[in-house]
Image (cartoon, rainbow, N blue to C red; front, side, top):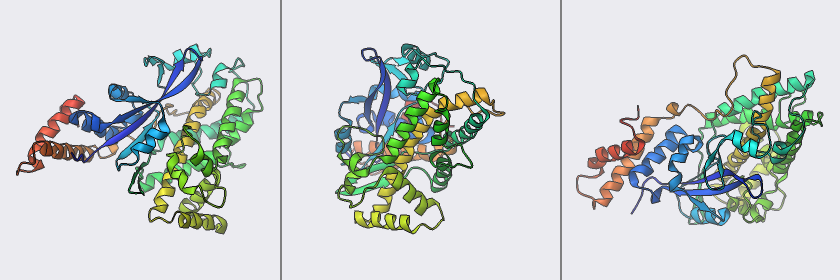
Length: 406
C-alpha cells in the first residue's frame, strides 16, 4: 500500500540512572506507518504545524515509540527508503526515571545532589560540584554575561528545523525545512555566539574564558567543560565521524560523512563552518575558502552535492544549538540575577509561533493524504479520493480531540 505522507522520528530521552547515579540517554523510534491512519496523520499535523517534537504533548504519543539499542545501524537501515526522518531531544527540561516515569527538573537536580533552584545545564560535573553557585562578578564579567544573554535569547527566538535526509538508489535526498530568510536570520545570531569577537563580546567561547577567572565557583566547572566540548566539536574531522561506530555525535547521519572518507585533506567541523559561512552568507572575498568549497562540491561528483553540504551545515548548527542552550540557560540565569532585564524572555522558548506556519495548509495536506489512503483501502472506487475527504477530516479531528483546527 502506498502511503503519501509518512514520518519517522528518533526521540533522545534523558533519564536518571539510579545504579550509576547520573543522567544517561535512551533512544526511541516511531514510524507513522505503524500507527492507526487517523492518529498518524494527526501526529504529522502536530509535528508540522504546532512543533510537537519540542512540546510536552509529545508524551501523549510515547506508546507508539519503541526503544532502539543500536541507533547508528538502525538509522542506516531506515535511510534506505525515501521518507522523512526527524530527530528530537523532546521538550525542554524533560527527564525520566529508568522505568520511564516523568521526573521534574528539580527532582533530577536533587537526585544529583544539586540545589533545585539552579538552572539545569545537563553537564554532570557542574551538577555534582560542591563549589559555590553565588559569585561576586566584576564589571567585565557582568558585561560579558549581558552581551551573551542578548545573543542567547535571539537564538532561542530564531526557528531552525532539522533537515530531512533519505537515500534511494544511491542518491541522497535532502529537504531543508527552514525557509531561506529564517536561515539567514538564524545564522546571523549563530555567528555572534560561535565566533570570537574581542570588541563586541558575547560569544560562547569568550564568556567561558571569562568565567574561568572564578575558580572557586561551580560556574567555572561548567565553563571549563562547556568550552572543552565546544572545542572538541569544532575540531572533529569528517573522517572521524564516518569511522566511529555506534557513537552518536549529534552532527547528523554518520553515513553522509562516509562520502568524504577518501577526501585528500582534513576537513574539521570548524573549517567547514567557516567555508560555508563565507560562501553562502558572507560577502567578504576569501579565495582560500571559495577554493575549498568548490573542491568539496567537485569531490562529491553528485548533482545533489550542494544540498548534501547544506544538510551537514544545518546538522552542525543544531548540535551547537544544544550546547549553547544547555550551558547557556545557566549563564543567562546568572546574568538575570546580576543584570535584571527590562523585558525578560522566558528561557526554553524556542521556534516560531505555531499558528504562523500555515496550519490550515498542513491540515489540508494531511486530509488529502488520508483520503487517498482510505480510497486505496476501498479498492479505488471510481468517485476518487475526493469522496473520502470528509471521513479523513473526521478521523484526524477525532484523533486530535478537536471540533476544528481553528
